[in-house]
Image (tube, rainbow, N blue to C red):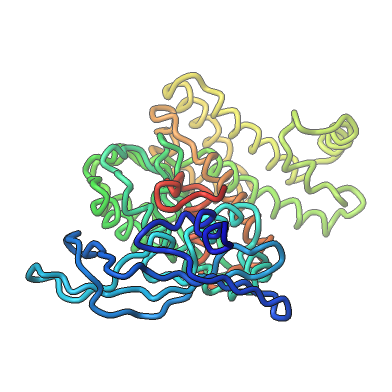
Length: 411
């Protein structure tokens, strides 16, 4: 069997297409495979599907999977057809081995989509000697195609949170279906406008903002405003993780201030106060007990307020939780520590949203887990050029999108 026929079988080329020549250049580490169509071949109109003969042709080239260490390229005269049906006109036909408008074959793109889950885009680009911008265009295209198939008509309970695209600035907001445990939308920024953009996208995928019953968020004023304005029937739940995080932030500031006054007592004690008691080692527990028992410190008082606030979330019902929270609030509001009094005021301001957790039982802990995966991917890539790339990667990591229906998986 001739090499052209062998390569035709390997590539899955079928009539009217055929491999006409194969050229291997060891000097340039390159394999060029030329494909043409048989004389008299007819092709479906890209608009209506009517078979039509070639009107003229356009020379095209696609990057294919490497042949061992050698770069491989496909070349073909791609016909344009002049459909006899009115309204179709002259159109470039779709070749079976590549996506319309792409400079890569389907198998090449499938391999990239498989590799990108575990490797940074710039590393993959280096391996294949292509620019990372070209690969990002591939990822963006597949994410857009897969998201176009998504149906959000059953979305009822959502959670959203911000994550940083770059250190200190360029944030994105990610919106999740908490029942399906998947990312359904990402937007640049972290203000109430992102909620408006989410609602527009929800409608575009068959969902309805009126059907959203619950929204789990942090205490961001922008998110609270966005839910109130855009999700009229949604009950707001302030996630326990963020409530305790605010408490821990206050505790950390109080301890840091005292550590400067009493370094011999509080040196290297930060994580003793921030860890949950059950996570302390025996040595850490012994040292923390000694600090609490032996010194009358603001840090000790703040630590006890933290433990009491955490205990609220062990309540078996909302009424029990409200009783515990009221007791905590009375003690915290009466504290002589400014940051503790401020925390008490914050809890009072968000009272109903905190307690609604005991009705909805919603938590954004899942979102925090996804955020850690996204940040790990960002760290491996040493950052992303722009927030749009971060959102694309977030869809790939957490969107549960169906890419297999869009390309031929590598064999």
